[in-house]
Amino acid sequence: MINFYEVNETNQMIEKEHLDVRTITLGISLLDCIDSDLERLKGKIYAKIYEASVNLAETGEKIAREYGIPIINKRISVTPIALVGGAACRSEEDFASIAATLDQVAKDVGVNFIGGYSALVSKGMTRADEMLIHSIPLALSKTERVCSSVNVGSTRTGINMDAVKLMGEVILKTAQYTKEDDSLGCAKLVVFCNAPDDNPFMAGAFHGVTETDKVINVGVSGPGVVKTALEAVRGENFEVLCETIKRTAFKVTRVGQLVAQEASKLLHVPFGIVDLSLAPTPAIGDSVADILCEMGLEYAGAPGTTAALAVLNDQVKKGGVMASSFVGGLSGAFIPVSEDQGMIDAVASGALSLEKLEAMTCVCSVGLDMIAIPGNTKATTISGILADEMAIGMVNQKTTAVRLIPVIGKEVGDNVEFGGLLGHAPIMPVNRFSCDAFINRGGRIPAPIHSFKN
Image 1 (cartoon, rainbow, N blue to C red):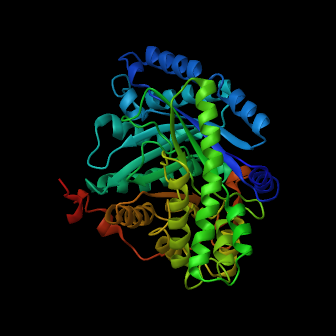
Image 2 (image 1 turned 120 degrees about the horizontal axis):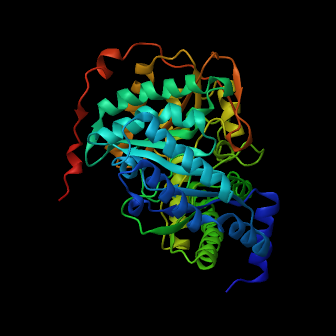
């Protein structure tokens, strides 16, 4: 039963505290599209996605109007294309032509991103996996809405260091292919450890092979709501702080649950999960870093930051799981530098470094996200950063991800403007000491001892 106080409270969160449903993501399985003929395959992919999602954008807008809840993005995720295209593709260009098909259907149905130009290679790479990975720079330079991800490690299998080395090269090549747009292609490319099958957020979303044919996943976001709630308990002890975050996360998740169930009903598609992540935007007042400051830090990055983020992440999850029986995806706090004005300010002030961000990823939901680095960074250095982050995910049995953007032509001290939800970012310094010999070893880092739980 919802009373008038709760209705008014929700309106306040929407109008003044930046509460929104960040995305409705329709997951679509393409396994039944597999064909050995490339043109037939692309035709089947287009037809299935179009038929499933032609009403997605309109449905999102209808729900937003009816309930007064902003729904910022409508998106699609598909089965990893390395699995779908393996029988038909003979070259990198063949795979890139599938990306063009995905881009076209995304435009035609009116979604802002389509995810799933992906490969899952935590233990090894098939010929199709390797071909798709090599095609990523071409695919992302020729499309607008396609997002790509590669899972290179997991707690169960260890870390595929051959894939880590290759992804360092691919990220740098993607930056070069899209240098006229400040290397924007890298903003649509994520490297994962323990990637979830049901993540609705881009750029890492794909429709896992364990999922049903079609599914609706919803991502909610409300950093501004949490910050406002904490302002009312400023100076109180940690018990009060935790309870306040937990209660607020409960309310935010209930909004997501409502939207997810309504979208499921209107689209006649099963409801999957609510991802209750605190995903910031460049808008003032919609910042995870500002929450950390409200908890008592001068800037994100100050001593105590990792502890504060751990508290925030844990209480968000606790509140969320009480509000919905189907919480999934990533769920917690995102710390993307370019998309969070508070994080940008912390970098500019000298409070936040790449190494501190890495420590923070041990306790947050994702990893090193939307971080701009100098364009002359070596591929092996990028691979070393990837390996560090994959190790954190593998050992801690959690999802970690890296979205690095080596901006060609930019150096430390420069700023890069991506626009929209992607925001802007200062170029952050990278440790210049070599890890070449380590990365060039090749092979696979074995799974940790605690992975053996049978």
